[in-house]
Amino acid sequence: MERDFWLKQEPGKPLFPELQWSRPENRLSAGKLLIVGGNLYGFAAPAEAYTMALKAGIGTTRVLLPNAVQKVVGKVLEHGEFAPSTPSGSFSQKALDELLLQSHWADGVLLAGDLGRNSETAVLLENFLQKSSIPVIITKDAADYCISAPKITLARSQTLLVLSLSQLQRLGTAARFPRAITFSMDLLHLVAWLHDFTILHAAQLVVKHHDILAVAVDGRVSTTRLVTDMPIWRLQVAAQASVWLIQNPTRPFEAITTALV
Image (cartoon, rainbow, N blue to C red; front, side, top):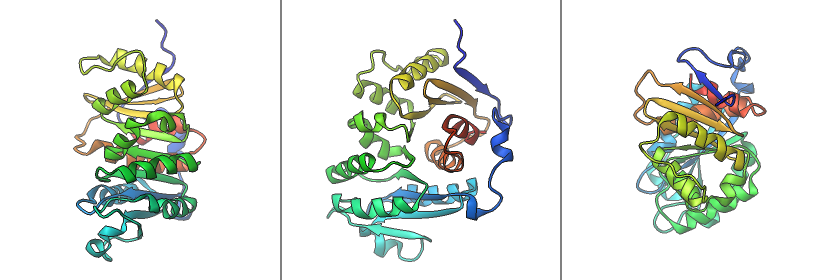
């Protein structure tokens, strides 16, 4: 069977080298990223994403946290902004105005995780995805919120989900996709699944299969073998992909694939 939709990228050998050659030479033209995440009991994910995005070459970054952590964070986190929180310390529905305001400043939004489990946060994310038109990159427990109500997320062409295999499995089930994801699935069948799923749904996907990272956009799939250990691979990939997407907004498949080299 012909699989023209599947491209294989070797470590250190980008499939789209022109994207690397045309990267912005100074931070003023390298894009603006808003990182969203954290709750009263943990905010490591947005803090780590901030560092990773800077390393990946973003121009300017802001971090939006629930105001319940403001006293804890204080002035430690550079470029920190705060939005209304619930009594339990997660983002509340009232945070929507601030989230939209900050996203209007940004070229892309990374929902980095550590959001906790809260029904108000779920409503907030759903409303934000409905109202936002810029790229939104979603990973870790932020993706869990979107998986439980996938209709809005999957309809957005400006959505990138960076998922574990178990999250992809739950996404397929929630979206009522006719073929199930299994942990014993080989790479060939996973690639075919991603191809068919992203033809049907507009959202973009990244998932890890053993030591392979697979990217799927509009039915096109690329695979890249990892040569180094990535203990927090979802956050690292999401941060890197955010930067490359912002800098190459008209070429999402190429941008995300190149971010993995």
